[in-house]
Image (cartoon, rainbow, N blue to C red; front, side, top):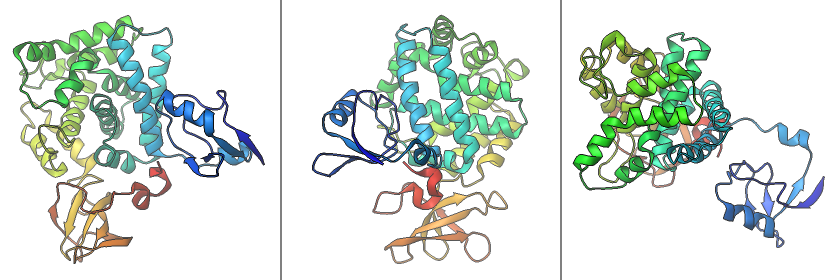
Length: 371
């Protein structure tokens, strides 16, 4: 064990800090696992930080976290999409995109329930990037349930991550604006699949299946989509899965101009389009994978307790719920795991985190949700 001063060689942008960092006065500056997201944070750590170097072996025993993997994926994707959108991609862009795909796949494989919960409870990153990662998670999980080959799974994930790069800057602006889209904005949106494919090819992405999924991710089964009006079997399976995931993730995300839709209602809206704009069998697959009450959904139980759907249950209508607020409205110090069904049933789906205190994901999902 040795006390060391933080040096430029110890920290880098996008890194998860492997130790607690303290100042000279002993005050904690950053906890182990904290994600370095700006050059100013690096400068502060180098200027003031010291840490206890226990050993590489001790550090390597830290359990993996879905939340940390997805946050790292979002941070790296932000840099990559910005560079691609501005035609500033570097030679290693494709390799770095594959690394983001790896992080998303590892997160989904580590704990799918936590990955799904992050869509509802980890909405802090820029919308354009967060939405792409969320869509990739859902599309990957549906595709995996259909026994899609591993190479195609990664291809679908890559397409979901990069599908909107052709309107990257506009995507964030429109998300933060209350103003209606102009005619020029609407025209640009309808053409963004073409722009995305052109930018990705320029950046060195040569996965033709992935590029075709990007091109077709706004096409509808009945031919009413864009940009080419493709329909039915002419739309790649991956594009159909991305479209489903895209719709769900967009509807449950908070926007400046509207509140998020409750997850069960978002799924209902999608099912109403089954057999028309949405492939009916794939729509059913989405429900099987997420359940009627997707993990992370805020609910009220029949006994008056309010909680969070923590895990899928034996059926899509009987998930496990962790109660976080008691029947009299007082926050619970210890969350109570409830098996819904006969004794505890779901009375209502709520629009937001019911607890007056910020939800700590790790108290429900353990180390797999550690920040």
